[in-house]
Image (tube, helix red, strand yellow):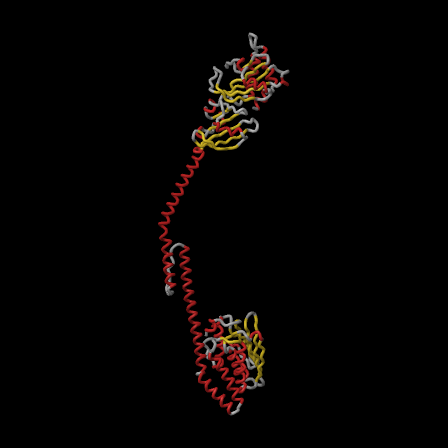
Length: 530
């Protein structure tokens, strides 16, 4: 299109064509001008071999063809439809598409033709009226060299729906009317749709070239379009089936090595559930199963260790209870005897004996474990006061100071924890002191714990004596043994973070700190313990 556009504006070529026409009636044509015209035309179409000839039609009659070998009738061509359409639109290139060959001496089945009329503005420079271009029918065939007929039909139409090119002869030979299935291509510049052609579902796409307004149409049956997808699908199915088969075969071989250690481990777990803990599982199998078996053995060892520790704790608790029972010396008999003494004191009107016996009865009854091992802090304080009343008759050279936080009175604690500490302070601390003794009992809440402090200004202890007082297995006197029992009772019930701490210096006194958990109410388990 661009080549034709430049060619018809070349005044040198048009002038040479005019000179050829003026010398055409002479006996000897102007071969130099003829050769010049042919060379100029060839310079424009050097890129193609599909050009058969360029024919110049003059206004006053006559023609000149760059290919003297072709034969045509001037009158027939001037009276043709294409000639008149070209004259009607001067300066516009007219393409007339693929048509049967009308040149008898040209061995081509189809021809492609185009023409342009010299515009009026150029007529004063040349006598050429129309330039007619004749191409082989294969002019646009290179567009289809990379496609085959099996990939569908390609058609190129001009602006008047004439076939410019096609990859099938059917669309060139039989194109008097546009097929019905291509009607939708004339409704828009581009698009796609499906139609049934000869009973086959066909996908049709089309678009219009922006400059030439040629319409390119591609028609391809769905069966051809989806054939590669079907091949890919079948190939994929084959690969997947092969992979699954290989996987199943590999699983069949390796399942035993994986599942057998797991089954053995499950069997041993069932034995553990039934209570059999005294065995050692032999780990085997993959790394994960082996690690699981190793962890299972570690868990069993920890369970056995915890069971042994629990048994030791229960044994120690039982021994503590046994010592407490041995120290009671048949408390029921004592209570009955003491009640008889109290009655005799009342009858004899001896208040000191009566009050002392009453205090001793109340103190002794607390060892019966009535209501469980726990009681309120205020009950513990009352028992301590009874104990001080009794001890005052024998060791009367001391004073007692109380500093108990009222918030503690309704809290719960183990029974008779403070009494052995007070007894140790009186017997071993204040009894051997020269001068008046002072005993201070403090109760408070600190850092979420119940804190009791028993202080005296007695003779004190050295570090070795403090260590012996709390050490397990050391042989102590009866009163000192109570300190150790208190410490062990607390730790057995509440753990290693609770118990006694003793601070003392010889000649300066002793300070015993009792740390207990805060218990606001008694649960069933706490009521039954100890």
